[in-house]
Image (tube, rainbow, N blue to C red; front, side, top):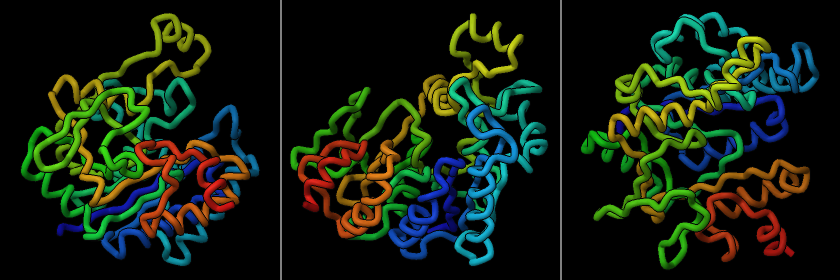
Length: 302
Protein backbone atom coordinates (compact mmCIF):
# COMPACT_ATOMS: atom_id res chain seq x y z
CA UNK A 1 0.00 0.00 0.00
CA UNK A 2 1.36 3.47 -0.82
CA UNK A 3 1.96 5.95 2.01
CA UNK A 4 -1.16 7.77 3.22
CA UNK A 5 -1.58 11.02 5.14
CA UNK A 6 -4.21 11.26 7.85
CA UNK A 7 -5.65 14.77 7.98
CA UNK A 8 -8.08 16.14 10.56
CA UNK A 9 -9.76 19.55 10.70
CA UNK A 10 -10.84 21.09 14.01
CA UNK A 11 -12.21 24.45 15.09
CA UNK A 12 -12.34 26.17 18.50
CA UNK A 13 -15.65 24.50 19.36
CA UNK A 14 -14.04 21.07 18.84
CA UNK A 15 -11.18 21.51 21.30
CA UNK A 16 -12.76 19.34 24.01
CA UNK A 17 -12.87 16.19 21.88
CA UNK A 18 -10.37 16.57 19.03
CA UNK A 19 -7.68 14.50 20.77
CA UNK A 20 -10.18 11.74 21.59
CA UNK A 21 -11.34 11.45 17.96
CA UNK A 22 -7.81 11.75 16.59
CA UNK A 23 -6.37 8.96 18.74
CA UNK A 24 -9.43 6.80 17.98
CA UNK A 25 -8.88 7.25 14.23
CA UNK A 26 -5.20 6.35 14.51
CA UNK A 27 -5.97 3.34 16.71
CA UNK A 28 -8.72 2.09 14.40
CA UNK A 29 -6.31 2.10 11.45
CA UNK A 30 -3.43 0.41 13.31
CA UNK A 31 -0.46 2.37 12.06
CA UNK A 32 -1.51 2.57 8.40
CA UNK A 33 -0.75 6.30 8.14
CA UNK A 34 2.70 7.58 7.20
CA UNK A 35 2.00 11.01 8.70
CA UNK A 36 -0.73 12.78 10.63
CA UNK A 37 -1.66 16.42 10.00
CA UNK A 38 -3.98 18.52 12.15
CA UNK A 39 -5.42 21.70 10.65
CA UNK A 40 -6.87 24.14 13.18
CA UNK A 41 -9.34 26.82 12.19
CA UNK A 42 -7.92 29.69 14.23
CA UNK A 43 -8.94 32.35 11.72
CA UNK A 44 -10.84 35.12 13.52
CA UNK A 45 -14.60 34.97 13.04
CA UNK A 46 -17.73 36.58 14.42
CA UNK A 47 -18.19 33.71 16.86
CA UNK A 48 -14.51 33.36 17.77
CA UNK A 49 -12.77 36.77 17.47
CA UNK A 50 -9.00 37.12 17.52
CA UNK A 51 -7.55 36.40 20.94
CA UNK A 52 -10.62 34.58 22.30
CA UNK A 53 -10.17 31.89 24.95
CA UNK A 54 -11.61 29.09 22.79
CA UNK A 55 -9.07 29.64 20.01
CA UNK A 56 -6.22 29.89 22.51
CA UNK A 57 -7.30 26.56 24.02
CA UNK A 58 -7.41 24.90 20.58
CA UNK A 59 -3.92 26.17 19.75
CA UNK A 60 -2.57 24.91 23.09
CA UNK A 61 -4.08 21.44 22.57
CA UNK A 62 -2.71 21.27 19.02
CA UNK A 63 0.74 22.34 20.19
CA UNK A 64 0.70 19.69 22.91
CA UNK A 65 -0.27 17.00 20.38
CA UNK A 66 2.68 18.09 18.30
CA UNK A 67 5.12 18.01 21.23
CA UNK A 68 3.97 14.48 22.08
CA UNK A 69 4.29 13.44 18.42
CA UNK A 70 0.61 12.49 18.30
CA UNK A 71 0.58 14.60 15.12
CA UNK A 72 3.48 15.26 12.77
CA UNK A 73 2.45 18.80 11.88
CA UNK A 74 -0.10 21.38 12.98
CA UNK A 75 -1.40 23.69 10.24
CA UNK A 76 -2.74 27.03 11.50
CA UNK A 77 -5.16 28.60 9.01
CA UNK A 78 -4.47 31.99 10.55
CA UNK A 79 -0.69 31.72 10.28
CA UNK A 80 -0.92 30.19 6.78
CA UNK A 81 -3.51 32.70 5.55
CA UNK A 82 -1.18 34.49 3.11
CA UNK A 83 0.08 31.19 1.72
CA UNK A 84 -3.43 30.06 0.89
CA UNK A 85 -4.34 33.42 -0.65
CA UNK A 86 -1.61 32.83 -3.23
CA UNK A 87 -3.45 29.65 -4.29
CA UNK A 88 -6.80 31.34 -5.00
CA UNK A 89 -6.31 31.49 -8.76
CA UNK A 90 -5.22 27.84 -8.94
CA UNK A 91 -8.07 26.54 -6.82
CA UNK A 92 -10.90 28.93 -7.69
CA UNK A 93 -9.85 30.74 -10.85
CA UNK A 94 -10.10 34.04 -8.98
CA UNK A 95 -7.42 36.28 -7.54
CA UNK A 96 -9.27 36.61 -4.23
CA UNK A 97 -11.74 34.41 -2.38
CA UNK A 98 -13.15 35.03 1.14
CA UNK A 99 -11.50 32.83 3.78
CA UNK A 100 -14.92 31.48 4.83
CA UNK A 101 -18.13 30.37 3.14
CA UNK A 102 -21.52 31.98 3.77
CA UNK A 103 -21.98 29.87 6.95
CA UNK A 104 -18.62 30.92 8.42
CA UNK A 105 -16.86 27.59 7.67
CA UNK A 106 -13.27 27.97 6.34
CA UNK A 107 -12.96 27.28 2.61
CA UNK A 108 -9.30 26.33 3.07
CA UNK A 109 -9.80 23.83 5.89
CA UNK A 110 -9.72 20.72 3.70
CA UNK A 111 -7.43 22.14 1.03
CA UNK A 112 -4.81 22.68 3.74
CA UNK A 113 -4.43 18.92 4.15
CA UNK A 114 -4.13 18.29 0.42
CA UNK A 115 -1.57 21.07 0.02
CA UNK A 116 0.48 20.03 3.04
CA UNK A 117 0.58 16.26 2.53
CA UNK A 118 3.94 14.71 1.67
CA UNK A 119 2.21 11.71 0.12
CA UNK A 120 -0.03 10.98 -2.89
CA UNK A 121 -3.07 9.84 -0.88
CA UNK A 122 -4.87 11.68 1.92
CA UNK A 123 -7.56 10.35 4.24
CA UNK A 124 -9.37 13.36 5.63
CA UNK A 125 -11.72 13.03 8.57
CA UNK A 126 -13.56 15.72 10.50
CA UNK A 127 -13.24 15.82 14.28
CA UNK A 128 -16.74 14.43 14.90
CA UNK A 129 -16.49 11.19 12.88
CA UNK A 130 -16.00 7.71 14.35
CA UNK A 131 -14.78 4.79 12.23
CA UNK A 132 -15.25 1.04 12.46
CA UNK A 133 -12.76 -1.13 10.59
CA UNK A 134 -14.05 -4.40 9.20
CA UNK A 135 -12.53 -7.82 9.71
CA UNK A 136 -9.78 -7.23 7.12
CA UNK A 137 -8.61 -4.05 8.94
CA UNK A 138 -7.61 -2.68 5.53
CA UNK A 139 -10.36 -0.69 3.83
CA UNK A 140 -7.74 1.89 2.77
CA UNK A 141 -6.06 -0.60 0.42
CA UNK A 142 -9.46 -1.51 -0.99
CA UNK A 143 -10.22 2.18 -1.56
CA UNK A 144 -6.89 2.95 -3.22
CA UNK A 145 -7.27 -0.06 -5.49
CA UNK A 146 -10.69 1.20 -6.57
CA UNK A 147 -9.34 4.71 -7.28
CA UNK A 148 -6.49 3.26 -9.35
CA UNK A 149 -8.76 0.96 -11.37
CA UNK A 150 -11.62 3.40 -11.97
CA UNK A 151 -10.97 6.85 -13.41
CA UNK A 152 -14.57 7.84 -12.66
CA UNK A 153 -14.00 7.72 -8.88
CA UNK A 154 -12.81 10.95 -7.26
CA UNK A 155 -12.74 9.69 -3.67
CA UNK A 156 -13.64 6.71 -1.49
CA UNK A 157 -15.02 6.50 2.06
CA UNK A 158 -16.27 3.88 4.51
CA UNK A 159 -19.92 2.83 4.39
CA UNK A 160 -22.18 5.64 5.72
CA UNK A 161 -23.53 4.35 9.02
CA UNK A 162 -23.63 0.88 10.60
CA UNK A 163 -25.00 -1.68 8.15
CA UNK A 164 -28.54 -2.97 8.08
CA UNK A 165 -29.21 -6.60 7.18
CA UNK A 166 -31.13 -5.50 4.09
CA UNK A 167 -28.32 -3.13 3.05
CA UNK A 168 -30.57 -0.05 3.01
CA UNK A 169 -29.36 3.44 3.88
CA UNK A 170 -31.78 5.67 5.76
CA UNK A 171 -32.06 9.45 5.57
CA UNK A 172 -29.91 9.91 2.45
CA UNK A 173 -30.87 12.86 0.25
CA UNK A 174 -29.73 10.96 -2.86
CA UNK A 175 -30.24 7.26 -3.52
CA UNK A 176 -26.85 5.61 -4.16
CA UNK A 177 -26.08 3.25 -7.01
CA UNK A 178 -24.88 -0.23 -6.07
CA UNK A 179 -21.98 -1.72 -8.04
CA UNK A 180 -21.30 -5.39 -8.67
CA UNK A 181 -18.39 -5.52 -6.20
CA UNK A 182 -20.47 -4.22 -3.27
CA UNK A 183 -19.45 -0.56 -3.45
CA UNK A 184 -22.04 2.20 -3.60
CA UNK A 185 -21.59 5.48 -5.47
CA UNK A 186 -23.00 8.99 -5.22
CA UNK A 187 -22.68 11.84 -7.75
CA UNK A 188 -21.91 14.32 -4.95
CA UNK A 189 -18.97 15.03 -2.65
CA UNK A 190 -18.89 14.71 1.14
CA UNK A 191 -16.20 16.69 2.96
CA UNK A 192 -16.57 14.93 6.32
CA UNK A 193 -14.47 11.87 5.45
CA UNK A 194 -12.81 10.92 2.21
CA UNK A 195 -9.79 9.06 0.87
CA UNK A 196 -8.46 10.88 -2.19
CA UNK A 197 -5.55 10.88 -4.60
CA UNK A 198 -4.20 14.41 -4.54
CA UNK A 199 -3.27 14.54 -8.23
CA UNK A 200 -6.71 13.33 -9.31
CA UNK A 201 -8.27 16.10 -7.25
CA UNK A 202 -5.97 18.67 -8.85
CA UNK A 203 -7.33 17.73 -12.26
CA UNK A 204 -10.69 19.18 -11.16
CA UNK A 205 -9.22 22.64 -10.61
CA UNK A 206 -10.17 25.40 -10.71
CA UNK A 207 -13.40 24.79 -8.82
CA UNK A 208 -16.44 26.80 -9.83
CA UNK A 209 -17.25 29.60 -7.37
CA UNK A 210 -20.97 29.52 -6.61
CA UNK A 211 -22.82 32.01 -4.39
CA UNK A 212 -25.76 31.52 -2.07
CA UNK A 213 -27.73 34.10 -4.08
CA UNK A 214 -27.15 37.09 -6.35
CA UNK A 215 -28.54 39.35 -3.63
CA UNK A 216 -26.14 37.96 -1.02
CA UNK A 217 -23.24 38.34 -3.40
CA UNK A 218 -24.07 42.01 -3.94
CA UNK A 219 -24.50 42.53 -0.19
CA UNK A 220 -21.15 40.86 0.47
CA UNK A 221 -19.45 43.60 -1.53
CA UNK A 222 -20.80 46.09 1.00
CA UNK A 223 -20.59 44.10 4.23
CA UNK A 224 -17.48 42.04 3.55
CA UNK A 225 -19.37 38.90 4.65
CA UNK A 226 -18.94 35.89 2.38
CA UNK A 227 -21.71 34.71 0.07
CA UNK A 228 -19.75 31.72 -1.28
CA UNK A 229 -21.38 28.29 -0.97
CA UNK A 230 -19.51 25.57 1.00
CA UNK A 231 -16.36 23.93 -0.40
CA UNK A 232 -18.28 20.63 -0.44
CA UNK A 233 -20.82 22.18 -2.84
CA UNK A 234 -18.12 23.63 -5.10
CA UNK A 235 -16.43 20.22 -5.38
CA UNK A 236 -19.80 18.57 -6.09
CA UNK A 237 -20.40 21.05 -8.93
CA UNK A 238 -17.00 20.25 -10.42
CA UNK A 239 -17.65 16.51 -10.04
CA UNK A 240 -20.97 16.80 -11.87
CA UNK A 241 -19.33 18.69 -14.73
CA UNK A 242 -16.60 16.03 -15.00
CA UNK A 243 -18.82 12.98 -14.47
CA UNK A 244 -16.92 11.88 -11.35
CA UNK A 245 -18.36 9.90 -8.43
CA UNK A 246 -17.86 9.35 -4.70
CA UNK A 247 -17.62 5.66 -3.76
CA UNK A 248 -18.09 3.85 -0.44
CA UNK A 249 -16.48 0.51 0.35
CA UNK A 250 -18.78 -2.38 1.34
CA UNK A 251 -20.05 -2.18 4.90
CA UNK A 252 -18.15 -5.33 5.85
CA UNK A 253 -14.88 -3.47 5.16
CA UNK A 254 -15.52 -0.28 7.17
CA UNK A 255 -18.29 2.09 8.25
CA UNK A 256 -18.49 5.52 9.83
CA UNK A 257 -20.87 7.56 11.98
CA UNK A 258 -21.11 11.34 11.98
CA UNK A 259 -21.79 12.95 15.38
CA UNK A 260 -23.69 16.22 14.77
CA UNK A 261 -24.76 16.46 18.43
CA UNK A 262 -21.87 18.13 20.26
CA UNK A 263 -23.71 18.51 23.56
CA UNK A 264 -22.20 17.80 26.96
CA UNK A 265 -24.23 14.56 27.03
CA UNK A 266 -22.57 13.43 23.78
CA UNK A 267 -19.14 14.35 25.08
CA UNK A 268 -19.75 12.31 28.22
CA UNK A 269 -20.91 9.33 26.16
CA UNK A 270 -18.19 9.61 23.47
CA UNK A 271 -15.58 7.27 25.06
CA UNK A 272 -18.21 4.51 25.36
CA UNK A 273 -19.44 5.13 21.81
CA UNK A 274 -15.88 4.82 20.50
CA UNK A 275 -15.26 1.66 22.52
CA UNK A 276 -18.36 0.02 21.04
CA UNK A 277 -17.67 1.19 17.48
CA UNK A 278 -14.11 -0.14 17.59
CA UNK A 279 -15.59 -3.53 18.51
CA UNK A 280 -18.09 -3.30 15.64
CA UNK A 281 -21.02 -2.88 18.05
CA UNK A 282 -23.95 -0.45 17.75
CA UNK A 283 -27.60 -0.18 18.86
CA UNK A 284 -29.95 -1.91 16.44
CA UNK A 285 -31.85 1.37 15.98
CA UNK A 286 -28.70 3.07 14.62
CA UNK A 287 -28.36 0.61 11.72
CA UNK A 288 -28.58 2.35 8.34
CA UNK A 289 -28.26 5.84 9.86
CA UNK A 290 -25.14 7.87 9.19
CA UNK A 291 -25.87 10.58 11.80
CA UNK A 292 -25.49 9.34 15.35
CA UNK A 293 -28.72 9.17 17.38
CA UNK A 294 -27.46 9.72 20.91
CA UNK A 295 -30.62 8.49 22.63
CA UNK A 296 -30.17 4.98 21.16
CA UNK A 297 -26.64 4.71 22.57
CA UNK A 298 -27.68 6.01 26.00
CA UNK A 299 -30.62 3.60 26.13
CA UNK A 300 -28.40 0.68 25.20
CA UNK A 301 -26.03 1.48 28.05
CA UNK A 302 -28.83 1.76 30.57
